[in-house]
Amino acid sequence: MAALNLSRLIAAAADTIAAHAEALTALDQAIGDGDHGLNMKRGFEAVRSEAEAFAAKPLPEALKAIGTKLVMTVGGASGPLFGTLFMALGKEISAAPDRANLTLAFGKAIEAVAARGKSQVGQKTMLDVLQPVHDALLRGKTGAEIADIADAAAEATVPMKALRGRASFLGDRSIGHMDAGARSTALLVRTVAETVGESA
Amino acid sequence: MSNVGIVIVSHSPLVAEGTADMVRQMVGDEVPLAWCGGNGHGGLGTNVEAIMSAIDRAWSEAGVAILVDLGGAETNSEMAVEMIGEPRAQKIIVCNAPIVEGAVMAATEASGGASLKEVVATAHELSPS
Image (tube, rainbow over all chains, first blue to last red; front, side):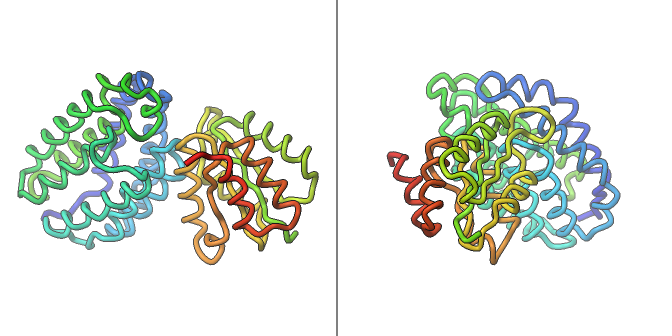
């Protein structure tokens, strides 16, 4: 795997979130509390502002520090959820991960997010994107294929009924809208896949 | 103070402060009490750093019971407890109870010198499950 340029990856992720912040907020306004885009943007801009310091650390420590920063700055339930994803990835990943190590670490990180959110696949959450991405990693899919799988998985949350989070208060009325957390997860997966390339 | 401390975490600072006022009316200064609310940027939400700070302010060696409103408040509170870490984390419990009634009942129980377990059980009695 080619050496990871973490500063470039952080900048790309922050750009993606910033570019989609309004659309994410609009998704969240439909079936949530309407702060997802703004919250995510605040968190990723905070990460961007310290990108050099994160990039100077070994990958596991960098991911843990990024996770902690997200926890402290996002300000909604997404903070602990995305923060936990990065922190748990950092705990399991090696300093120069190959596909097998990345896949293993990603699987553990999904378990940590599920535990943090007391949720599981099929409840119209970010897990509904993370799990198919993990499956694709296991099956040896390319970065481009994984990005498409993530988009399709986010799209597949539209007909689901929300069973966790604020959207679950709406019951059947949550059906017909995409989950904002699933969408932002797919955006981040595509950014990572395109920035790191198929060597990942 | 040896009584269990109470922390109130709401998405709204007004709800958190109002709940704290109701608790104070019941128990005065006999229970360590702290509240936080809002995302730290003037909007509705909850904030891990603010929750950790509230736990510090309400800290008691007998433990701290946290009362929360909606899901994000619970998730952020659990995250805050984890970040505080052991040995204090084992003396902090996020209650499954309505925030206003839970805080008042838990504080009333705490003011009589009840243990953390008893305080939390009193709050939990308010939640059908």
